[in-house]
Length: 361
Image (cartoon, rainbow, N blue to C red; front, side, top):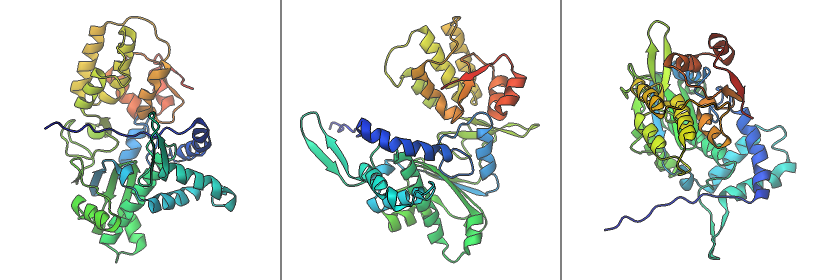
């Protein structure tokens, strides 16, 4: 029996709607880029970003990871309204009646999506949120956060609020959520929290990637005993300096290298730059790092490329977050990569002055 084709409908707003909604969404995302906020937007892993995530969770004893598949399709309209109201409070004068019409416009674009097919068929949906809307990431993440806190709270309604706030920390990005628990909450399991979420809010959180662990880091790279968040894992990189290094699964990097997102065959220069860009995320896995070094030797690129091509810059965003300057596309050693992860930009520039930085925007 043939397996039915499965697709994903991506919302593409009109240019007018995109400009009207993106201008505020971008400002809120910029404000939330700091590590003190639980919405994990634009979190770079380099220049100390990885260590900051580790330090925020290091004081907790148990960690629950939820990877909620197609979370945006199971969101109810009332959740969207609550999330928008919460986000309005983060904007100067955002709760003023003057802006009610604007945020109603944001809500309608997320929930009451109009779909015009090229064959003339008109569709309209009133469930979930519109994937591709500028506010979708913020709204999804906010909903996942308050549902996460509420689900744990419902397991222990008797706890004083001050104690509860001390014993739990949650960070989320769209359908990816990591909880840090301690004290009376340290015994909670993913099954218990997911069951509360299912009964109270009719959302399904259990998946093959949902798990709990008592360790944030792996003792060695690839052990898979620590947490996973934003597709990253961490391991103890150096016992003497007590540094923690991030790494990603080698399989994911193989797939990304073999199948470019744009599907366009690459010449030698583009192939080399793609390998170099993915090296930033893969070098934490030493076996993968050695393989990529040999791959760059095999490509044999000896040309001059002073800047990253415009279409390739999105590959760098998961690593540098909001940084407006990044290292030039120069080949690096593992020692340079390690320092790029653990050092602030100015410190890195002092240690590696020839690995010059330049503006991206």
